[in-house]
Image (cartoon, rainbow, N blue to C red):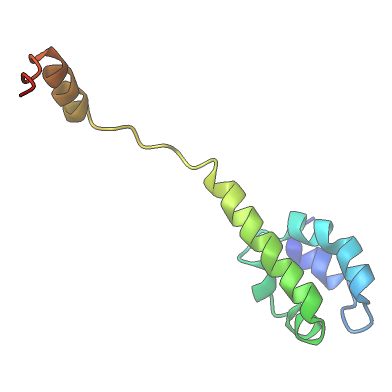
Length: 96
Protein backbone atom coordinates (compact mmCIF):
# COMPACT_ATOMS: atom_id res chain seq x y z
CA UNK A 1 0.00 0.00 0.00
CA UNK A 2 1.43 3.39 -0.90
CA UNK A 3 1.18 6.62 1.04
CA UNK A 4 -1.54 7.99 -1.25
CA UNK A 5 -3.95 5.17 -0.38
CA UNK A 6 -3.08 5.00 3.31
CA UNK A 7 -3.56 8.69 4.03
CA UNK A 8 -6.73 8.81 1.96
CA UNK A 9 -8.21 6.12 4.23
CA UNK A 10 -7.89 8.34 7.31
CA UNK A 11 -10.35 11.05 8.24
CA UNK A 12 -8.10 13.70 9.72
CA UNK A 13 -11.10 15.99 10.32
CA UNK A 14 -12.46 13.71 13.05
CA UNK A 15 -9.21 12.06 14.17
CA UNK A 16 -8.09 12.65 17.74
CA UNK A 17 -4.47 13.10 18.73
CA UNK A 18 -4.54 9.63 20.34
CA UNK A 19 -5.88 8.12 17.10
CA UNK A 20 -3.18 9.95 15.16
CA UNK A 21 -0.43 8.68 17.46
CA UNK A 22 -1.78 5.14 17.08
CA UNK A 23 -1.68 5.45 13.27
CA UNK A 24 1.64 7.31 13.15
CA UNK A 25 3.85 4.22 12.61
CA UNK A 26 1.69 3.24 9.63
CA UNK A 27 1.75 6.79 8.29
CA UNK A 28 5.55 6.96 8.48
CA UNK A 29 6.02 3.43 7.12
CA UNK A 30 3.92 4.04 4.03
CA UNK A 31 4.85 7.67 3.36
CA UNK A 32 7.53 7.46 0.70
CA UNK A 33 7.59 10.93 -0.82
CA UNK A 34 9.06 13.84 1.11
CA UNK A 35 8.40 14.62 4.74
CA UNK A 36 5.23 13.52 6.47
CA UNK A 37 4.86 17.05 7.87
CA UNK A 38 4.86 18.50 4.33
CA UNK A 39 1.92 16.40 3.15
CA UNK A 40 -0.98 18.78 2.43
CA UNK A 41 -3.50 16.20 3.63
CA UNK A 42 -1.96 16.43 7.12
CA UNK A 43 -1.46 20.20 7.26
CA UNK A 44 -4.85 21.11 8.80
CA UNK A 45 -4.58 18.36 11.42
CA UNK A 46 -1.01 19.29 12.38
CA UNK A 47 -1.95 22.99 12.55
CA UNK A 48 -4.81 22.15 14.93
CA UNK A 49 -2.70 19.75 17.04
CA UNK A 50 0.66 21.37 17.87
CA UNK A 51 1.76 18.44 20.04
CA UNK A 52 1.20 16.05 17.13
CA UNK A 53 3.09 18.42 14.83
CA UNK A 54 6.02 18.54 17.27
CA UNK A 55 6.03 14.74 17.52
CA UNK A 56 6.08 14.40 13.73
CA UNK A 57 8.96 16.88 13.45
CA UNK A 58 10.90 15.01 16.15
CA UNK A 59 10.35 11.67 14.42
CA UNK A 60 11.39 13.14 11.08
CA UNK A 61 14.61 14.42 12.67
CA UNK A 62 15.31 11.02 14.22
CA UNK A 63 14.61 9.27 10.91
CA UNK A 64 16.91 11.68 9.06
CA UNK A 65 19.74 11.04 11.51
CA UNK A 66 19.16 7.29 11.36
CA UNK A 67 19.37 7.35 7.55
CA UNK A 68 22.66 9.23 7.76
CA UNK A 69 24.14 6.31 9.71
CA UNK A 70 23.85 4.21 6.56
CA UNK A 71 25.50 6.71 4.24
CA UNK A 72 28.76 5.43 2.80
CA UNK A 73 31.90 6.42 4.63
CA UNK A 74 34.43 8.04 2.35
CA UNK A 75 37.86 6.49 2.44
CA UNK A 76 40.91 8.75 2.41
CA UNK A 77 42.67 8.95 -0.92
CA UNK A 78 45.51 6.57 -1.75
CA UNK A 79 47.77 9.63 -1.86
CA UNK A 80 47.12 10.25 1.83
CA UNK A 81 48.10 6.70 2.76
CA UNK A 82 51.30 7.01 0.71
CA UNK A 83 52.20 10.21 2.56
CA UNK A 84 51.56 8.57 5.94
CA UNK A 85 53.70 5.56 5.01
CA UNK A 86 56.47 7.84 3.75
CA UNK A 87 56.48 9.86 6.96
CA UNK A 88 56.47 6.73 9.11
CA UNK A 89 59.66 5.65 7.36
CA UNK A 90 61.43 8.96 8.08
CA UNK A 91 63.70 9.36 11.07
CA UNK A 92 62.13 11.46 13.77
CA UNK A 93 63.75 14.83 14.35
CA UNK A 94 66.04 14.87 17.38
CA UNK A 95 64.65 16.60 20.43
CA UNK A 96 66.52 19.70 21.60
